[in-house]
Image (spheres, rainbow, N blue to C red):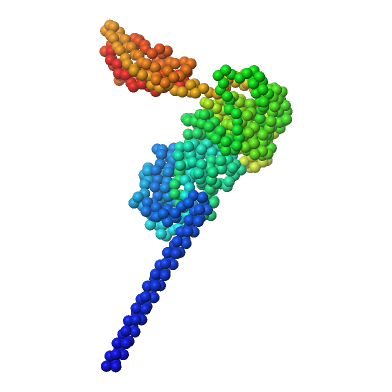
Length: 602
């Protein structure tokens, strides 16, 4: 009986011990889970704080992480080819360790266009506005969302971002032409790329000397590629746009063929001036635009305006010098009887330079990137570009092309030094500043005696660099002759009237009538009404273009007519079907669309 009671007590003790161990284990497990949860919360809080360091915009880290895990990355692009494509991404990530963008796949991911391996032929898109350059291609790696379990916790960028490559941020021409203008109008295309959007530069350069200009595009500090690693190993952009519009570029730099204007320029001076005005407002620069007065200005006002006119001359202090700059300034002042002021990128702030240029009557400069500032000149101003010895102005025309864009309303003149004795070369400088000491002696000698740089590809042609970095003693008599001749041909560059740039609409109510006169003679009469928008416009010259094509033939007969109906008899055959097209033309070069084709049977 005692043994049985003792065994019972031992069983009860074991049971209690077991229960105690179970309770303690459960408490420890619960504590462990609670600790894990606390650690996870602390990590999420830390990641949220890192995200907050990137932006003032608030983000719920848990919600963002859940969205990435459930939906993965989403991409929708515009454009058919990599050269004209811009893509919007939700939750595109960037690994700072691998230096690669990452597309995370889930069952909810979207990828349009879904190109498969064609995405690598050669790329999804161009990261810069320079077309099809192999250093500017963009692509991404792909992973399933499950891989996130084995990766560092992502840091989320809550801002809407525009991700791009700057092409050459050390060169002012490239800054404006390749970066600022395309970024500005890309941001205009998408409503959420507003003043609160953030720019992210992925080319790997440092800030460069003109970084303040990039800051003008957004109220938020741009991010450089090298700065991303400071925020984490995996960055995820909640909403981003990648790529730049190329519609505002007008020049190609000679990577495939010698440099020159683009074959299909899509931008006009109106867009360039809109951009320039927006930047001036950001720099707190105001300019009184040319007033459009119906009755014109008074003689007194014109005299006062003339007294306020001045010429701006770009002064360079290190390379490509004008050796007799003071003499050149004196000649300009005497020739035009007006003030001449100098501006210098080395000595003045950029806004102070633009303040001067924006009211100048003429801008004079040696060929160089600083001439991109001519986009800030007032309408009717003159651009005078100087070229060193052996450099043909017709082969290097970025600023001539800019000045000649419709709506820029600038007059362009170039002067070229044709006297070898008035040039100073620098063969012993580094190659990037025109030095040729690193070349074979025969090649050095050939370059030294050459009098005309042949057309060439970009970018390290030693003969081009040798000549463009010369210093020049400007021959004043030849300079003044070129200037006087150029000013004689200056058109009346008043502000372009909108009516002079409007295209006609379709002609209306076009129809045809036919008649057979003899077995060998027929007539075709075509008539139409004026385009609807013409009745609201004052147009200097209105004409109509008519194309007539015999059915089944490959050629057509074109006619330019001043009236709205015409009877054709020459080359019109009886019992024959003709196709007829009609369109309107304003001022010889503004073409309207063709009306629907007419089918006419004689």
